[in-house]
Image (cartoon, rainbow, N blue to C red):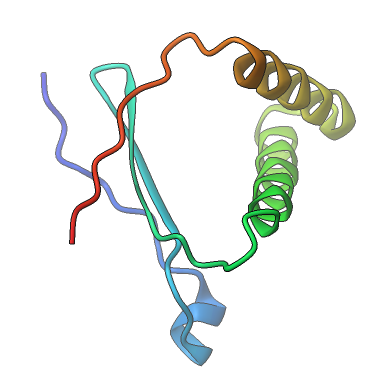
Length: 97
């Protein structure tokens, strides 16, 4: 059975103040598909973005499952390090205008 794509809500601050969408991600048939905008002149800023995303993911996971936020963040960090060191699937990247 195929479900229709279900886009997430736009963050309220972005609706109120504007902003720039930098990442959109979906799991399709078990694989990650993303659209990404370079967004920063200094690539190091992406480290902060990814860390902030990890913290938000850990927090929502903890709220929804009762798991420890700190333990969840540790698990995310461990898998991120492992995946950066040895990707299970490096994927492909295509620039689309």
